[in-house]
Length: 154
Image (cartoon, rainbow, N blue to C red; front, side):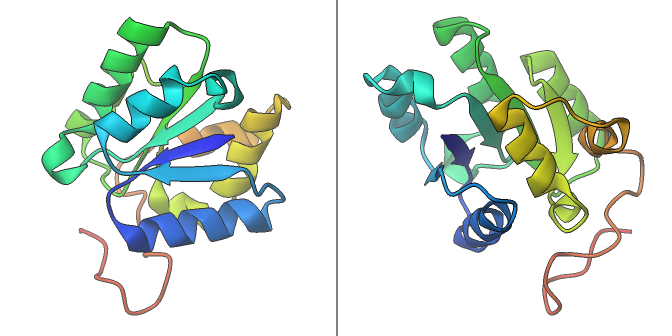
């Protein structure tokens, strides 16, 4: 199961659609820390081997903080990826410091990120090209996923 921690429904829908197009339908989305802890504490918790976190989770705090608390509580056996609309070096550093296995831009969903996430989930090796999706160079976001969304930061 791919677990998405995201507070904005528009991103949940896009993310789920892209993951489905990449060939995987096992996705669950949660928006609160409590929902996440309940799922990871359940009997089926081992099914959730890939977790994708937004950075800004509104009142729930930061995705990087959630990653750190999950690493502290549940250990290192899950792949955790920060998926953010920010290319801010501080946000990327927060994810990396918290123990994220990678950080990717939401804009990369259009450029193969969903396929790469499904490969990670299935345990398939990533090509060097796919692996580069998890590194955010400065200015990576050039456009949003759907025309009409707010423009990317310059």
